[in-house]
Length: 417
Image 1 (cartoon, one colour):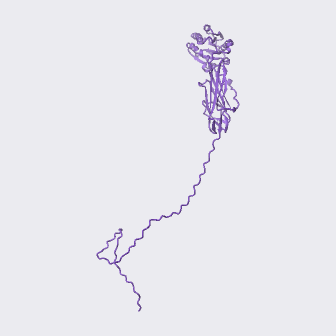
Image 2 (cartoon, rainbow, N blue to C red; image 1 turned 120 degrees about the vertical axis):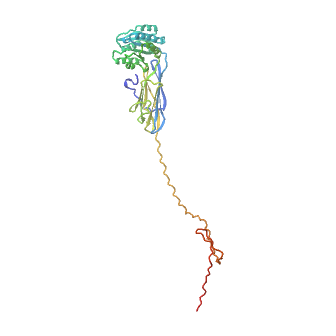
Image 3 (cartoon, rainbow, N blue to C red; image 1 turned 30 degrees about the horizontal axis):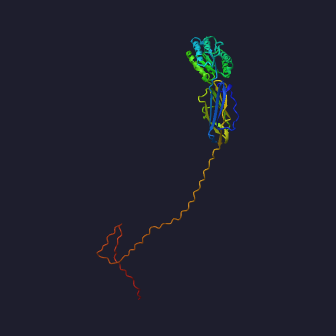
């Protein structure tokens, strides 16, 4: 299924996962993919593990997928368009491509067949170890009327079926070279291509020239990396030579991630990297091409309830490979502790300032002691004729003044008559 969920649906998410979930753990798995052992690792964490109500938790998802190298034999069918659009010099380069492809493979373990299609399909060579016989079959490529790639794909499957017991362990592939528009219904072509991939075989598509429906052909390839375009016939032999050693590699092709949020946690809008598609409480991410370095997702949640809570009702990733079945893996479910926000403590009531103690009656400090008034004793004596009292200035220093003596007669006792 390429890419995402089959037939527009998705597997059901697991029920609420609360039992002994941990904040970060790996969930590795291994699955067979047509002779290659492939592993998918799913990792999820929530940080911080403890938060207060009203705070945010960052959720991080990581997924890695790879397949072990294998020395399983290769069974390859070269399916070539031999319609009239491929005549002339192009046909000569197609014959050379068959020879170059066989030369780039270890034909002691690989087996290659050749099928041509125009108005009908023709098997020019069954699977063979003989590079010379394969090259000789290529010389029988000739242009004919019509174009039925769907019939060519069905004939290629029959060639793979004739691979015998070794087909069960072989890495199978069909390499389709198309240079004309199909005569039949495009849906018949899509169905024939799906039969190849559902078998577990790799389907490589080469769109040649400008007469093809490139968008249609791109949907047939097992993965985007297995779709090629070529405009020059002279470049075809080198392209086939390059493809030969890569047909044994099995790689992740696409992915689809779904995460279902719990009712007591809200997605923080704008926090997703990359941004998810949202539908209710479901977050989804679709990768049409497997990202280099694997899947890396992060987003933020805001808890709504106090307590120990799971950050998801379940999260899954579906990984599609170049060949073989899709692999579905569940992410672990981290939990977080949510504490109540601290209650604001009321500020202590200000204590009224102590009543000011009445100021003690001020004791009047004694002023400086006033010196006693100077007593001036006037001595009455007769003035000296030679002494003249100088005039006293209006505002000058007081000076001693001599006054004339006055004789006072005191009355005597009364005398009677």
